[in-house]
Image 1 (cartoon, helix red, strand yellow):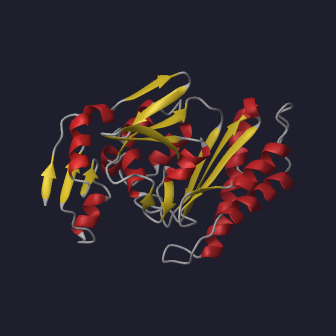
Image 2 (cartoon, helix red, strand yellow):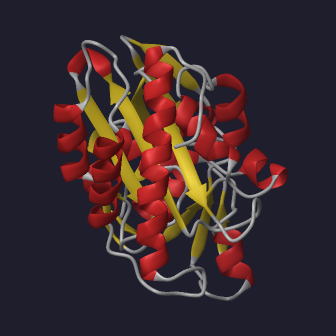
Amino acid sequence: MDFLRPATLREALELKAERVDAVPIAGGTDVMVELNFDHRRPAALLDLTGVGELAEWSTSDGQIRLGAGVPYVRVIAELGESLPALAMASRTVGSPQIRNRGTVGGNLGAASPAGDTHPVLLALGGEVEVASVRGSRRIPADEFYLGVKRNALAPDELITAVHLPANAGPQQFAKVGTRNAMVIAVCSFAIALRPERAEIGAAVGSAAPTPRRAREAEEYLAAEAPWDTRAPIADSVKRRFGDLVAQAASPIDDVRGSAAYRKHALAVMARRTLTWAWNEYQGVERSCA
């Protein structure tokens, strides 16, 4: 196995163009597990940890460009105010050691349906920036996931950043697991309120072949929410919203949970996170629903 260590993004793209069979590795929290269990034996690894351009983030015109190599621990520490739901999801990833190494870019590259940050990227309407020696492009998050562990990257492309709206409004993330830490999600859910446009972003994770938007739930709540008055949302609206979120999923039975449980849990999480996000919009302290 060849081990390639570029020092710049340009060098990384050139190496990837020459060796499309090279597997990118940054934190290694997914790739090393596959190697250790002999589930994967690539001809080459492309180490991106020395590429400084990937470990930076910036804000411009109300958008945050989050480099693919920024670890979760920095998302939590530096972007909790601007991207609260992404920080919430980052806190649920693995252990402190994994959060210190793992990245949103790596989560995207793995494209696991259970990836913790995926529902947030979908709910916020994020875009994935990818690049090759041919140039760069942006892929809307809801077009990036093609199937189980399959994404829209061309063979010679690398993920370079994620673009997300800064301070976009109240948002929440919730996850159910078999325990509180070091666990793959049984299911997860993210919601983002966009009051200035009377819009909702809602997405489910670990409950379908890919992370996916709950579009009917988004449209229903956008029409029913009392945006102008900020009055409490009726319990009947919350229940219907939860039902529509559950209907957006197509889960399976596996060792972590049954399909029926996943749908039930998604409906509950949708109601609760909606309550918390709406309370924030109202300026009320968080309470359960």
